[in-house]
Structures are given as structure tokens and as C-alpha cells.
Length: 285
Image (cartoon, one colour):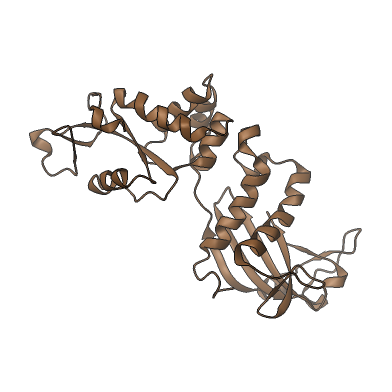
């Protein structure tokens, strides 16, 4: 598993993608796993397993989920702190996965399932959870790694409420970029607030509109925007992510501030209290 995914980025993306698939933000506007129905949460484990197998190119198992390095393994997923194992899995290898979008963390470990590692009680299907000793027996492959970031998960509830209170997808997109400046915005965020498949189109329109208020909307897929972000000392944006920042013309007393040049004028990141100034045409493309 470490050879296939040394830093865990592929697995983290697969887990995040499984959650986004069920949330279906384009049609539902949902953005948190807690918004899933009970049946959807149960099904999340199956989709996580499928996405991991597809992402890593693992062959089907004969009895268990798939093959890893010539061994059949099963996958168990939880949104909580424990997993449930059926009697027929005793003695088998299991990849245990846990994830929580509230904390933004996920983990994956390997366990040889045995009755000695189980709690004494079982549910109606005979499934049992791990005892404290069982949890201690997990060999962690990746532990408490960050899930891909989505702005709506991290913004305060009142800010998210203000965004969703806007009457249209375009207005919500513009409110998001104004409220969440210097924060990476993903296509999943845009889909949730617009409830439209063309959320990226709304972002492009927001770029033009917000420039009038001095807000520069950057797109990680554009090399020029990457150069501007770097020159301004902003975080590097991943492809297909967006970030907004308010700029003001540079004054002589700000000579040491990171700056960019737009239409022969120097601009820097605005500070609280700086007077709003519209951006020039160079910022609209």
C-alpha cells in the first residue's frame, strides 16, 4: 500500500471522492457528510472500497474485496471510532479505514482479524467490534492524514448561512469569494452553492464582477494567476481550485509589501481599513 501511495494523497482523494459522490452537491447543495441520510452513510463504505480499488488498480478478490500484493483483503470503513466484523471474516486480512470530514482527517490500517481482538458482545448479525486490544493491534499505514480541503467545511456557520441566503447561484458564488478570501475554493464548493453543473462558469463571471470591488479571483489552472499568487506571497493553488483576495494600489509607504503590476500600476493585498479600489482590465481575463 505504501508503494502504491507513499504519501496517502491518492487514498485521501478516493475517500473524499466517495463522499462527494453521495453528497451530490449539484443536485442537493449538500457539503458535509453529516447531511447524508442514514442509508447513505451505510453505503459510503462500499463506495470508499470501490474507489480505493479503482484508484490503485487492484484486482478483485475471490472471496474478499480485492487483492493487495498477492493477498486477499477486505475493507471496513467507519465514520466513527470502531468497525464491525462478521464471523466469516475471522482469520482474514482487513484494511480498516476511518474518516471524518468535521476534523478533516482520515486513516488506513491493516489488521489480521481474530476473535481474541473482538469485543464480547455482538449485534443481531453476529458482527463484533474491536476491543481496546484489537485497536492496538492495527498496523497503521496512514494515520490522521488530511482529507482534501473544501472551504464550506471550514467556514463558520454564520458565514455559510449568509452565502446560502443569497437568492441565486451567481450571487452565492460572489458572496463566497467575498467571505472566504485567501481560502482555497474547490469545484465541489462551487457545485454546492450554485446547485448547478456550471459552477466554474459562475466563478468566471464572479471574477469579472468582483474586480469592480477590488477583489481578484485567482484560478489555479491559469499559469498567470499562479505567478500573481506567488508574487503576492499567497499559497500555491492546485489545479481547478480558486482563491480570492482584495487588492489596493501600492503607496510609497508600502514599498516592502509583495506586489503585482496591473496596467502599469502596483497592487498589494489590502489590509483592514484600506479604501476599496476597482481593479484594472488586466485582472478581468
